[in-house]
Amino acid sequence: MLTFFVVCLWTVLGALLVGAVVRLLPGGPPARRAAAAAGFLLCALALYLWGASHMFATDIEETCTLQHHQPLEPAYGQTSLVPLHRRCNAHFDLVPPYVNPGVVAYLVACACCLGTAVRARLVEHRSPAGGRERNTEAQ
View 1 (tube, rainbow, N blue to C red):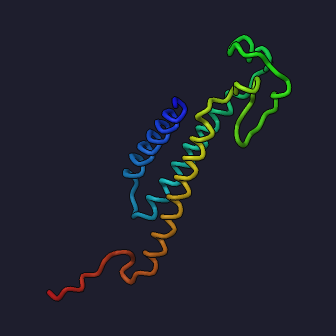
View 2: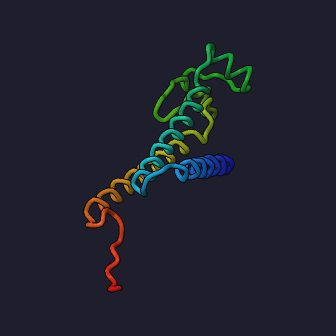
View 3: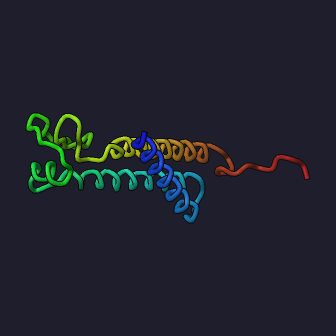
């Protein structure tokens, strides 16, 4: 339950930060949506690097036993970069549990923003007014 809360909190804070920065940028909706996609991609990269920083230890046995009070079982000592994990045993991973779902959430948000940016650009390109509504009422 705590992991779900942390993932939601990271995602909401990242979205608020990206939204605040995007509002300050000049340009129309396609440019802002593309900037939001880039912002979410940077958030995903930052969270991925944060999780990866937990994997690197000079002595994995010492890290597991002294810092985390977990026994090291060599059968579970494999490291994976996608999804991030480095296990001490079957029940404990050095990478925080919120990292992988958070990275996926940011990448999904990035893909959605990029897709809507492409769609908005195509709609803007097709419309005769360049994305602006024409006033068709007689004056």
